[in-house]
Length: 104
Ligand SMILES: [Zn+2]
Image (cartoon, rainbow, N blue to C red; front, top):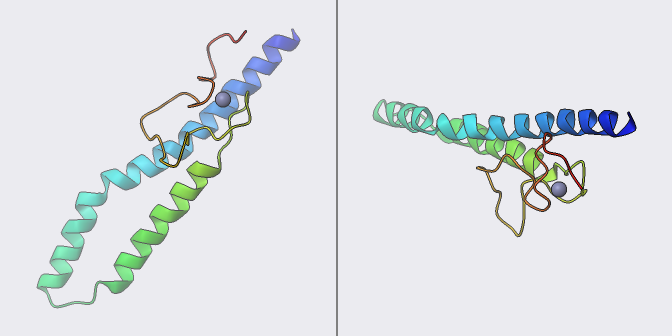
């Protein structure tokens, strides 16, 4: 029974972790839109400084949020093994926790 509860809370924690990953991925996917917007503004002779800073800030917030996330089972950083963020993983880069599999 206790084991069941522990696993449920782990899978909930991992779901939250993966949500922060999705945010950053969505940010990456909007990159072409951003480039198109900058391009359009530049060709109209507009200022793009503000847009650039907003975009960079958005990236930083999401990336830092992802870096700060810790694994529910090993308490290490979930997405960061050395320095680089692992955007592709759905498991903990340290212990492989994915919120579903049985641990032993
Ligand atoms: Zn872990």
